[in-house]
Length: 255
Image 1 (cartoon, rainbow, N blue to C red):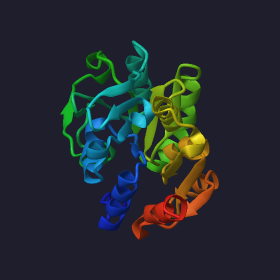
Image 2: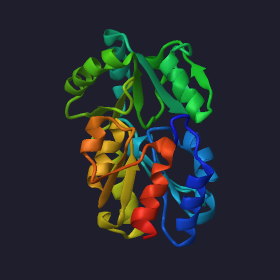
Image 3: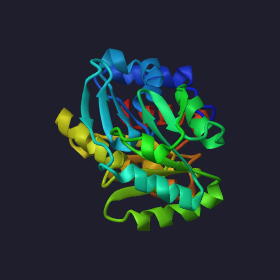
Image 4: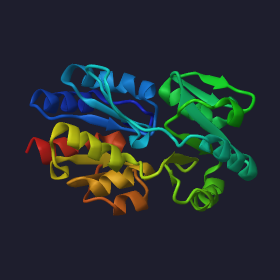
């Protein structure tokens, strides 16, 4: 995606072209499945049997059939603890349920960013810790980027051995089931497809893309990614606003 979260027609055409040639395509994102589906349809994953790896690897969906082929949730009872940690650290907190964002504060600018990006509604609850008793794939802590840089190690220490904790954006700290990240989700998908990681190219520009970039046979960072993300890659493609994904397709797939 470009900086404005749109996809150029040139990129769409290139992705469709490789799918017509038999290449399987998946979108791996921290977003909920419903928030990814419009993009998946734009690049015609529903026609070619592509996949959505949502919630940073916690859920895998076949776009053509709608079948959820893998799903893992947070441990029972831990949402209340995450909520208490959020209150102590004075962060925002959110999760997803029934294709909505669940949050106590719909004025939180960072929760609004996700709602807008996914084109889904924010359902406001009075007491997050008491009301989120149903299974959820993850929780997100939100706050100003500099502040969240300090929250991340505190959360990692508080939930060590029970959750995986990492930032996806400067203003989000992901509270995930233990061991779950994009690399884990893609490994499950490869098992389903009967493929090896040496056959996989992963492209990304976010902190939560590092695991899959390092895992893939060819890991690609976009030029707009942070220095940390670029350092994890085998190849740095042009900026996402310059059709960097098209460069990867032409250079490594259609050569």
